[in-house]
Image 1: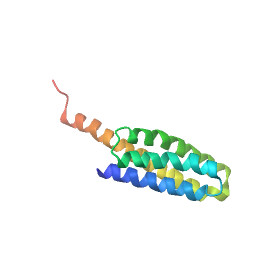
Image 2: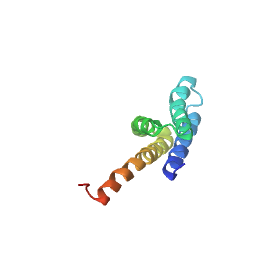
Image 3: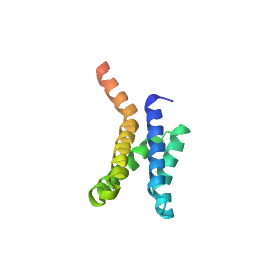
Image 4: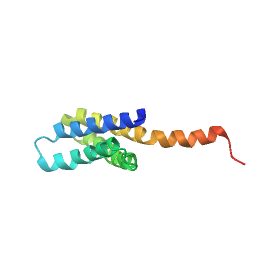
Length: 112
């Protein structure tokens, strides 16, 4: 597994654990918030091609949720900021292989 995929996997597992602890008292919210990062982490672990893409897409939702909670519920601000940081890590780790490939082509010059 590449370093970017390891970071992606770790961030997804941490996000699932954060959501599990955060929504411990609400069973439906626990399922809605914990299951997607856990399934994405499983996809990364199993080397699924689309796991990084879906992790990045869902991370945009997690980022938006973290911003909303940070602004509206001060007692939960610490968890919201943790969700924000993990969502940014997921987006960067999921995008890194594609960015490397894109800029590697540019460095080698145009093909004639």
